[in-house]
Length: 185
Length: 288
Ligand SMILES: Nc1ncnc2c1ncn2[C@@H]1O[C@H](COP(=O)(O)OP(=O)(O)OP(=O)(O)O)[C@@H](O)[C@H]1O
Ligand SMILES: [Mg+2]
Image (cartoon, rainbow over all chains, first blue to last red; front, side, top):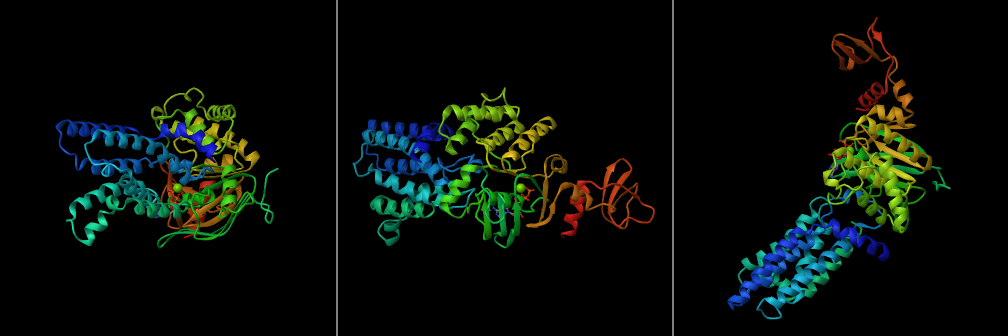
């Protein structure tokens, strides 16, 4: 199966739409450069970047030819994993570049928070309805980020919605288990 | 040798197949047993054809009932994988990658069908595209092709690897008359290797192509047999006249000043030879 996926990697990369991530990355990198040049700390930038990049990563699961490909021996889960691997590589490159450019603490640009948002979105995409699952999944990172910003700090609610920043790895683990449970979907 | 179900000898067999969407039963206790050849699936909009075909293509799981495809059980992961290596599927209104060429698209499907040899894949893809009249378009971006051409690209992708079971949901949609005729020869060739099950709204397609016809209505198979028998089912119950007929269960215009009627002909009516359309209208009418 690995050999089949390796063979499918190049055409799959061509089937993915790269324009959204290219546009978003350019914006984020420019923002990082500008804040670095101004000498001010870019407090919010890593969080915004994590939400945007995670959303785009989940969005890469959108496959227009899904109906045609549905009964091929390479399962939908394997095809999704391939798309995530390809897009994930690009996302990690942008994330690393942002980390180098932005004047923030290393903790703010640790990859865990990005993965927590992305994995949660993927879990929703896997379990969501066939037609709209990916869209719903792509909304999750942005929504979670927005709710986290909106909820005032201090209470249990704030702790919970801040989990993607404060305890990203357990979130990743739970989301991965949820994804694996939906591998036949 | 073709693998067949050891019990029934059928390449495709279902018993009590049922699929529900909430309160709606889209496929209702369908029993099928199909061997080699081309089988046409007729039925009104919403009859459950697509749902049934998606189950038979291993895309959708039924809520109840058994399916055996090529003698294998699609609920068993290993057997499902083996089935998927040997079936071709054309969904209704397929979407493709606009940035690919037809050759790349068909080759991509062949890769995902685990065909390893690149030369073999390219040759097969070329042959399928040429058979469907796309020989001069195979290097053009799909987004620049017409709807009917895109449909033929998807068909070529379904045909790749000479599947033993070919499940086609309205394959002739959007095809011009010349391409419909070309498609008939291609499908007739496929039927030598196994079973072709296709849904259509075109009874002429069924007459020309199918050895067997299934009529589906409200989730059930309400008629099954040879196309000529479906036409014969309405024999003696079709007549023509210039005006409306009170005894007709169905009447429709066939030309200026001429109406065709289905039902019990009145005394002295001009009874005409029934066609597949008449038979289809009669059995779907009786099923309600
Ligand atoms: N995903 C779905 N969710 C809910 N209902 C559905 C779904 N898919 C189909 N249906 C319903 O199931 C019934 C059968 O639909 P299906 O698409 O199988 O019909 P069909 O015979 O293929 O019709 P057509 O000739 O228009 O293609 C319809 O009433 C339809 O509304
Ligand atoms: Mg349909």
